Length: 173
Image (cartoon, rainbow, N blue to C red; front, side, top):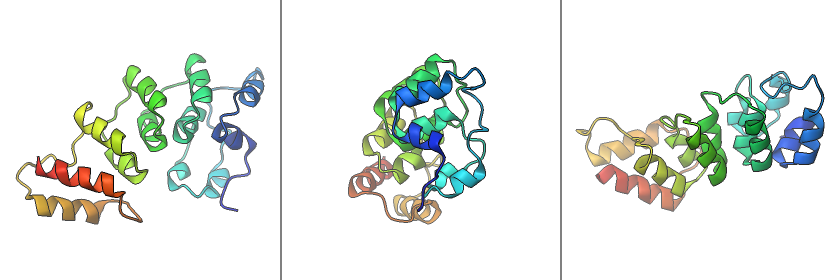
């Protein structure tokens, strides 16, 4: 079917806070534990980013933009992982991004996720507010930057015209 049959993943994906709180009320539930998601569960997900090992509930909530569950986990003192910002950018939920930023998540290597998941405004915010760069070497000519970027990106399709135009504009600066 192309998606996991793991009930907890479905609950998080649907941002079903009442069902999640019910599960979390079990004294054995650990908000930081990644044992709830096996590699087998994630193998069936269509989204490659979810194939990473040791996913946590908060990362999955960030990816799906599940704000109610994300907040619940934050207020339950879930661990802020090093890769949480990447999942938040991929999910594109402004409130989750803001909460991650308040908690000093590192957005340094997140531009590609804004591009891949077609978050144009987030792409611009990462460059303008977080200082993310497409290229560190200012001596690379513009046409070469575009070519290098497209050759080395992990797109299966080109980004939206808005993001592509923003990329071209950024290359010119």
